[in-house]
Length: 351
Image 1 (spheres, rainbow, N blue to C red):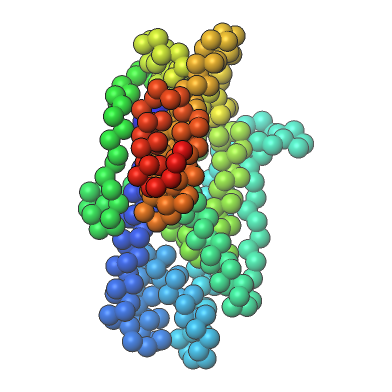
Image 2 (cartoon, one colour):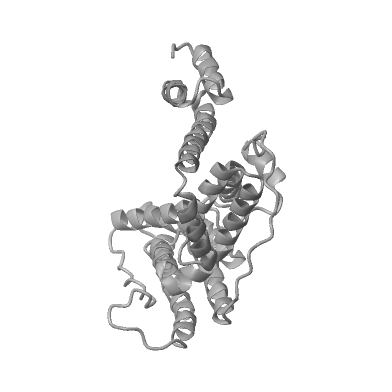
């Protein structure tokens, strides 16, 4: 379970590193090739035509916020409006596909939460302050949802960005277990396809003011519709259920308990429902529950230790606080307790 969570966090860090590397290269091109507002506008249009709408949008926004009264800044504002209109038009097209899938069911009752959501109206950006605020909101919404994709060559990205390779967890890699079979409704394929389009759209228009965060928020709401979350949560639920069963077959009930518990959060996915049934049985055994709670606490300590290590150079005070918490919470005979105590001594603080 710990390996599974570590892989997810590492995937997020790789995705962030990829974005930083691409933005660094784009900034270099702008600095070298654009020495006037008109040249910056032309280069932004080039980025747009190449499909790099994030860099194009950033350049348009900076031109508008420069508040220089010229044709280039006026055209930049028009470009932003055009991107907003394109984004919402493409979003509506995907919504229509999902509506067609949903309408194949019987008519929902009044107030049924399974009814797909309508996207929020796009606000007109009138002032420079609002433009900056909407741009930052769209950018944050995009970064909060990472990873949306992984780089094709992680080693290259880690070298360029300074990101360390995946940490050696010193734990055995959890074996792949046979996934439980799920009978797939034909509608599932259409739903999966539509949400892949949503993800592509989120990446494409991520930095477009007003549109980027509206798309991200709308997709989150769509994912919460039971009819869709049943489908979208199933792959992860399958993996967690298989992991739990593997732990159980090895008599590692505490790890199995935690994996079942994580899977249950993905209800209404069919495999999550199965996990909930087994979890209910395990909860009847107080020894298993106590063991799982201790295991969860230890996992927190390991996760916090890794975080504290990243802070040791840049924020030693905060790192000492985290190491102190680990020393208080981890059993004294565990490796993580000893390691945290040693790091406290190295940072010049007593436990």
